Length: 167
Image (tube, rainbow, N blue to C red; front, side, top):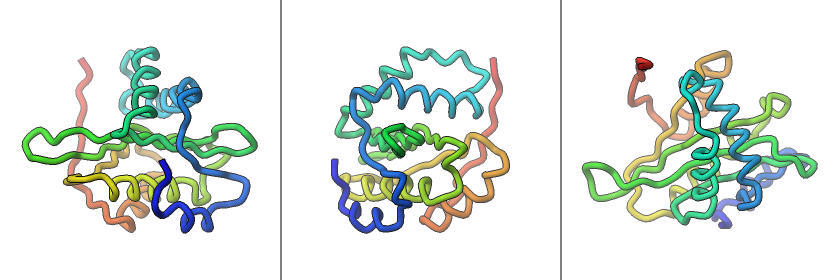
């Protein structure tokens, strides 16, 4: 799906990295990158079912309510941003939720994350009846302050504080 701000965002990208919608045939690679991200976050202690993850990625790529963008360099996927729309549990409308983001460590520090986030927000902006969009920082570490600043600059406000008890 072509996003309305595609041409404007392209100008800000380094020429070596291109960002585009994921293709069905890339589901395995996208799932592998998201698995890496999940294992580094709060889900890392859970027994992630790789087949379920792959199935969800495949369905999300092929859904009109799914958003999966990849960052590519030299024919290799070096980053991914996945999100989906879900009906709000108590309101008439939808919630856009980030499912996972991963950028290869060698490709961090540029505009790749910002561009993926802006593409996500553009996608949310063209969907009807979206009440809110969410982003979860599930890996607290050295990049957390940077992520918080980027999210705040893009209109996100901190809305919760998560605590987890593993059973």
